[in-house]
Length: 250
Image (cartoon, rainbow, N blue to C red; front, side):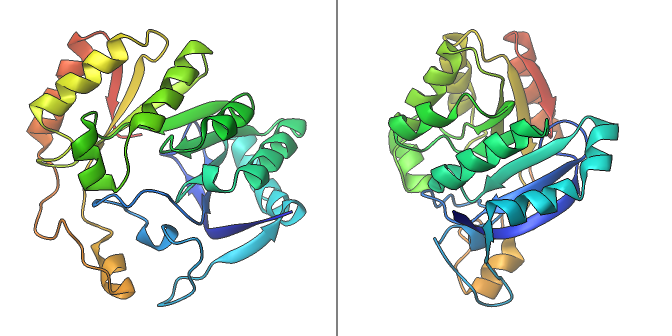
């Protein structure tokens, strides 16, 4: 079995604990206006300097093994990101099993959008989920990501009900995800999911705009500045007061 990988990034420190190898899967069912990896959205693309490579399980495991020393010393591991790794569920599952057999810590960084059958079949294998929670109101979620969030929220509830190890990641996009209403909605939702208490708030930046230019894709957030540090810390305090283990970044 093979998988399509857009990039392998070494020595990452923001995609889970310790020093990690982050593997970016190609393909994503969302089209978020603020996406930092727009080259990963199509199922396959080789253009404008972006190259997708096909790996079999042995080849990808070989790339992971190269970083074992740094992983072991730092308490790190491998993070499967994207794109959306759940778009290639069979390959992802096989890689998670292979890493478990070699005692390599695994993280799945996901939007949460996958058929419930697929999600249920995979959720027992990662050591940690990084679960992106963007917008609670479904109409706005459709506007800014291109898809409904109903299945996403259902899968999040499943993780809570099975007491899986999850960190919620909330992107703070000015005027879109960082609004008082959306923050309040997120807190209300998570207050009903008692096993999901850890949150990483991700400040917005426009570093990916150059990728859109290379891909000849309009960048819908052009002109929006990086989130205000004072505003970001205010949101952090709101989550902390609501009882969540919250940090900026991650």
